[in-house]
Image (tube, rainbow, N blue to C red; front, side, top):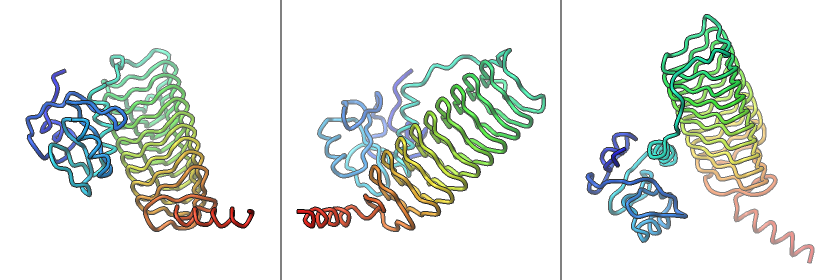
Length: 299
């Protein structure tokens, strides 16, 4: 594969480039290992400085961050970065096939470019889109829609009436309940589960062993780290981060940019962006003051 220019990557991502568009990008890199000739992602001014000092070729960032020099501006930088990882390091998939051991209802529709692996079960009225990949033992309920380029790995279950947008990735043993809606570019980790009627907006990354309760909404580009949970009827706005083993209570609402610390419990409405900690979760500074008072009281 010929390395693309900055302008070509902007077209791929539907992003805006700045700086010399003819710069060739050799790949993508993280903050922990920045590489010359590569593109890195920055979410703060400190990130920008670190990447520029390391000599990266260009920086991917959001519209609220000012970057001097070559770069790409994307509305959802994390989603764009994930797409670039797939672009530069594509997974090798088998050629299209409907495996002879797969059980497919005659009313289902499977695109000729899709791969349906051993012992998959496709229910009536289900639709499997172009270049979709169903590895093995995948089960799709009635009227399920699987978008183009989706990847469903071993033992994934998608319940009746659910829809997956383009380029979703469901890791082994992930479960999607009935009537769920997953937007484009959603990742669902191994052994994670979505209950009935959950809406997951574009670009959400859900780690392993995460549970989301019925009718909850996960906002675009949010990140749910391993063993976190969201109870019923909760609303997470765009860009929320749940650290490991954190929990969101029933009917809670988390504003855009909320960062819930590990083993914290969010109740009610968290209306301001920023870090929260504790049980129940409070703004980080408030919780640290509370803990300090508690320690002084015990002294």
